[in-house]
Length: 88
Image (cartoon, rainbow, N blue to C red; front, side, top):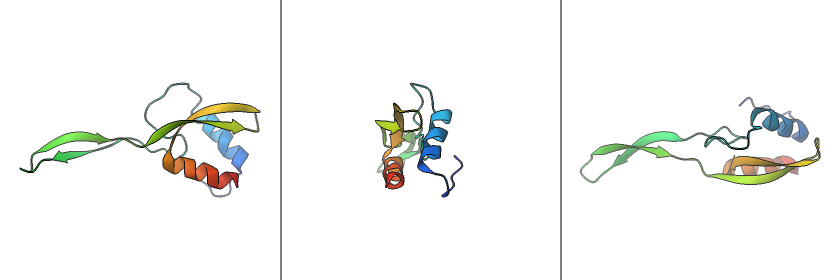
């Protein structure tokens, strides 16, 4: 996701709304763009099996003052910190 420090909070929310306006979506954070990673489980005998590292995603309701509506976002905890930081 393109990220600019000069974006206003309202523009930031509308960007999120445009890109992620589906009700159900994959395990991707709509603010930071975090996705599942791939790695290995490593046993004591050093056998390796594939696994996925899933991002810590939550469904949160965010009020968009531009539209005057509440929107549900699938957002990571890191993205939630970013949103609260921008609201100040």
